[in-house]
Image (tube, rainbow over all chains, first blue to last red):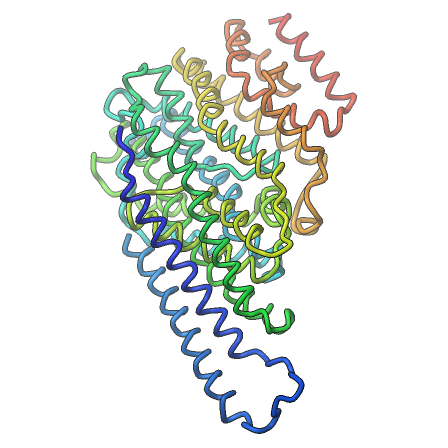
Length: 81
Length: 442
């Protein structure tokens, strides 16, 4: 009877990394696509929607795409197992 | 299909019943937080989970090689009676924990049942102690910790990143993400758990000589196992969903997303890296972790404690029921018939007890089950008082030795106890009197 610490540690590491990574990415996506709160003194229309807002939006979609890829990989793991 | 004896038929039906209880016991894993955060309506959530379980059952053609993963020596004398007794133990324990609204591992119940039945039928040599520790005890401790820590960290992170955003802006996105994670959990559950039933049925068919050894399961086995688990999932173990979705901690959309993603990642990582963790324990752990991760989040440790107690009891309790069932079933045909009748009676009694305080899709989100903390604990500790009416009715219909043995199988008698403190109905007392009268008459 020997405890497979290596496998357990690996599971722990991978789980932590993947969970935090995906949740982080997805949150960035949400942050990028949701309205910014109006801050006092901020130039509201200086950039327009095409400026930093557009960049944030593109970045957000990239984050969502990465998350979708992770889900696809998850489905692949289930099917291939 | 030509040579299916009655016994093998009974084993197949029992296996499908177990599959069904497995489905409705584990709906909560994928869907509890999805329902409580409002990501999906309760009925839609269980329907989606059911479909994905069904799909999952067909996805993987690799049959579970050993139904117990090497915990018991399957060459040492696994006869259909032993499998039958093990399944009965697992079903009864699944129903007891469902009545109490406690998420407990269906796989561990199956392991426990098979271990108990094997101990009686074959002896200690038939059970691999090391494998029990490695496959049941260590994962039971590790699963909630791994999933819980991951979910805590993810919850912290997501609240931190989105701290500048209004809650109502982000909730929709979180809910969408949560649905995706829950779908993955459902799919993985269908592939893993429907496999187990297929393995059990195939093993029974092989021992009966209906199917050649090492053969793939026939299509009807795959289909029926998939349908049983999907049906169970669709009917939904609303009691367990309520405990997991509302009872452990109050879940907000970001937490639900973090918890479900953590659960999906843990399940996939562990099954892929060969350190299988129980889905139920992973999901409960990640829900707790997400409760810890939110500022001001409260984890109801009394509920968590009862869950942990149920996890600890799963193996011995299912084993004890199965051991009693194996003892009876070994007596020959009438013994098997007795076990079948008793099992049916117990299932009926538990179902009746559940009707007193029904939980379904309409009230699943109404706060934590408002029962005093002590009830279930006392019930779980209860040392088998007399069984309720239906059990005695079954017992009195059979020859007298069986009545004495029915007492031995009595952990099943614990079932009505759970309901008893909640509502000590006068008719329960009458039933007890009848039970005593029945055994005296026998």
